[in-house]
Length: 415
Image (cartoon, rainbow, N blue to C red; front, side, top):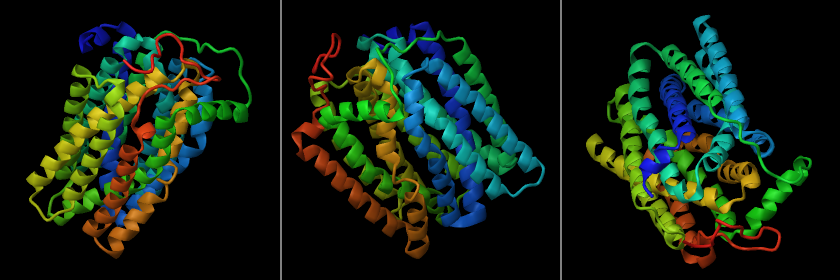
């Protein structure tokens, strides 16, 4: 099976295009917002913006996952896109009326973070609804290519737009892309969620958590990435200041993001052309994560900007490949009626400490410097990677059979 076969699935192809355009607008907004806030408010306020997003996002993830496992995923994603279009439009009007930039961006970031708690698990659960299991590695690779293409073009457009016209143009582009994505989702069929019964929120979450506990690779991944993403978030806060310390501006910030996305696109393509077997997925996954951590540390070193970009490109390649591995394992090893809630639990576990990490990263950068902050963050990230490699059940990315969640046809423990 090749990526062409996955591309030839009409509704998946439309989803890919619509979601790719959506991500393009989001990346333009994020670059524009990030540069604007970093220049006006400094590291602490820059960290506060990301905290606002996750404070809006995390509390609703469990409820979002439950909704995704009850309603057609296409419908949930459509409503979330249209809601975000309205929210960003209101923020654009507020800025044009002369309201404070930082306060306005804080509010819209918080509210769109809440809407993302529905759209992100909905899109993740919709992909395996649209393609057959034997095409999932290729479909997830194409999804990774579309996402990273958006994150490659978005920073270039966003950096130029915010540097030339200001944050308002970035917001306008974001609105248009949300509307386009909504129109595409409208054209996709509603696929019902097949399940015997539903319960209240507590019962729904408990069922998904019971499944997670039967899968060591999934339980360990959620637990270890609580630590990993604390370091990663602190590192991301330092990027505008690394560029600023080199005497560069918004365009260089955009190039930084675009090069990382280019690497991730290459990694996604590699992951689709040569899919990693379930037997070796975990080992490759954790080795690549360790490589990512070391690449990030090199960003803060006193080296020329072109050399920083080399490590950004390599980090992107590794990240794109492991993204295909994780998304494919979540697609082919989680039952259809559990995917929304399990994706939400995965996101909550990975992101639960992130509201505090940007603030911590901003404080550390102001108190010490970027290199010291990166060194501490990478140390924690490497320890996480080591734990994943040492424990055999953690690095075995194979579906585990259990009495309550037996392996069904098409979910062979290895292939």
